[in-house]
Image (cartoon, rainbow, N blue to C red; front, side, top):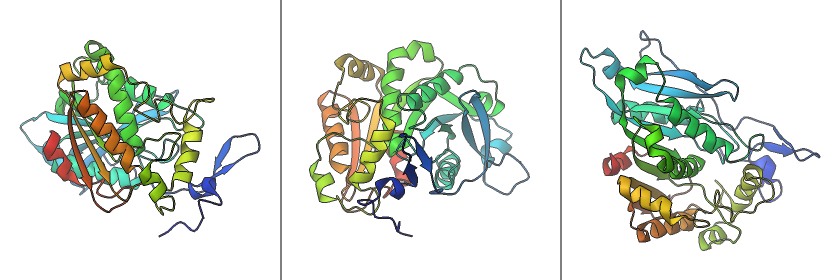
Length: 315
């Protein structure tokens, strides 16, 4: 169903928000439904899931997905870990949002892998880098968790950070932070980043943004609002959190090369963010990183984002 609100007239309303006179925002409607976790072994679902608190004061938690075949097997098999960061422009949605829950279910069932979907704090109540900090905290938490699903079935020496849209932005920036403290994360060992149509921006419009000013999925005027709400107060969209080409530090990428990480970046021609995704892949390749890309014709933001074939290229 198309959104009846014209984003050029009311970009806040288009993303389900209203701006208050004091600058705060009110979420005026739910843009998606939520699905509860299901850890009951008697349930017929092929995948079990459960929520585990990480930082109760910040209300952050993870939803762990485990294939019933693995859970019921008499032979314990440790599986790669995919840490998943949900989309929503850094201001919307949740790890419990139905579309993300169903995708993680599918990954856990078909790859197979233990999937850990991260609930992080949203802007503008918690502006960046709060989301990055929450996700780094969870990587540290993996070292000490006593949860049986993770201690028994998760091989943290084969860990991949994955995100769609805003989640791709988070996976990228958490990766940059994590590579600077590799020893401190042990036994968690990151092997790669999967950035599906990652959410980036900048102060000047790219050709794809100008071409798709009237995108019915994610028009640039709506992403402008998301960045206004998500970035630290007083910075513009050329801040490194938004524009990954700004402020790149060569020593960070040297460490990524030393670790041998693989980086997969996907994009779709019908997405206003397309040019930024292509540019990031190009620059990272020029820095000598092991970058794979899948850029397709047509499509839109979110197109192919739940295609599991990407895993065959990186796992």
